[in-house]
Length: 385
Image 1 (cartoon, rainbow, N blue to C red):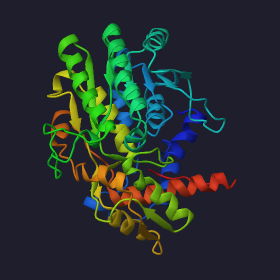
Image 2: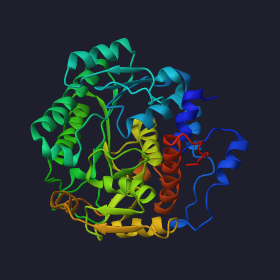
Image 3: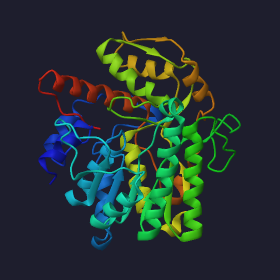
């Protein structure tokens, strides 16, 4: 049974407990509309994680250290790891103080990833078997501070890989659609193709991919990486070019109107964050012998600002979107793929997304309504996601 704090966090992020009555109550809050690709919101979004945990031999349960764990991806992944493998399975690290209202943060320690010795110490003291390295400056933020982006995104990666080599750790470092560039085929972009990114974020991610693969082939480090599309989650935007796809939901519920910094026809690949969490955990659980490469594409669905606005109008008919184009962000978006081919991940380790655009829209509206109700001191309703 999940702890009280974990249960609260799972509900906050859109997951449910295992109670049948809770499932029925939560399911009654979802609509019966026909979903994209014929998908329906999973009746039990934790089922695949529970199955994976049950299939993991006791002696192989991981001890995971997550860098940058207070960001968009780290907190959800830490929550799911605790749900699957126990409260002591995760060490959360970052470089800021935890706020009193961040009740989903457990076993947290300060860790500067530019200090290789400090990473060593954390790994040894925490009996860590797996490193998940989320610390990074994202695309738009990185362009505003290139020297810092080089330090965090490149030196940090090198430090992580050196520690992984010394202690024989499995290591996951995410990559991104930003690792591609305008010379890359933009529709159904394959895993192996031209990579000439035009942002320091993209350049640093190509560096991470290649350095990780070098450490794998040269030193035997079990390096793994996934190229993520834009990730949609009920967390405040953090400076990425695809973050309009998060802010649009907050604006829709607060003001009924979103001002978008990308053109209405700008198509980009995206993924709901529960699918993102699943992709990491199932990839890490895959046998090394089943992997034909060390860096894979994964994706959920692609859309334009106009299409996500249309999806929101299915639930909020009066929602409006207008446009004030940001040249820098538009230039970045125009250099990225419109869609990803993730067929090799689906073949090698059975990757599969559970959420399409309309499911994601429905869940995001419900989750942000919960968040706003909580901020007002109201009692929010349970949400299934």
